[in-house]
Length: 332
Image 1 (cartoon, rainbow, N blue to C red):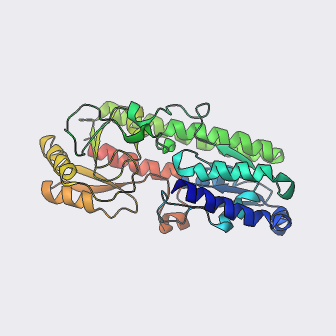
Image 2 (image 1 turned 60 degrees about the vertical axis):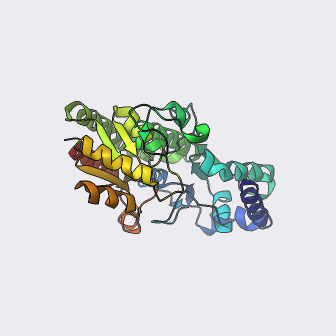
């Protein structure tokens, strides 16, 4: 499957390379706007906030369709064209975005035909800390094996790519983007730096809020009856969790053993709130709530957002504030 995906990417890239003249002139067609392309909503929002006051026209594009499934995303030919003709491409990297590395490599080999774009790979140990494989993190979740409070290994030792769910990691991502934007558009540095300081302060405030929630909470256990993209958030603030899946798997149906485990855990620890993700079917959460009397609450992964939140221009700090509000209520 991976080789087929790579072949599709290469074919799309080759098609775009045949239109090198068109691509290299894209900036002129867009009135010399600074163009930024991002792969997830968090970086899209950060780019929008950092460049909001630029005097130069700026176009920021999110490759994901709002409300769409992000983990099965594959770039279309128009996405490839947008990346190859942009000024800055911001991507996370990791297993879900191996296509990006291949595309960048192919583009640089053909740079004589393209307006060469800069890029930021945020899944970088020098940029963001805590990039251990998933099976090096402590966790407990329901699966076909014996259940308990001990850590279970994750499959394949995969890296969790949802690094932004911890505010201090998001702050490191923000800094990397600020530095690259100032390199690309030095005349706009004053505007970028002012926006950065405001957003940086808000991320530090989120971190402080999360610490206070941890320190004042009556318990420390969270139940995720859904996929689990919040490893960095729970790890950063010492919250224990139980989840239907080890990470952001493509599965949507929990096994009977997993469902039974979560129901027993909610009952035994007298947990009142069960979490599900945005754009989720809620099947697992509703089943757990039906069996226990707990209520279901949504948490935003900030990987993608609904069309309504996208159109409203919801900021990462707003979404994470709502997340922390829900977590605070659940822990008390």
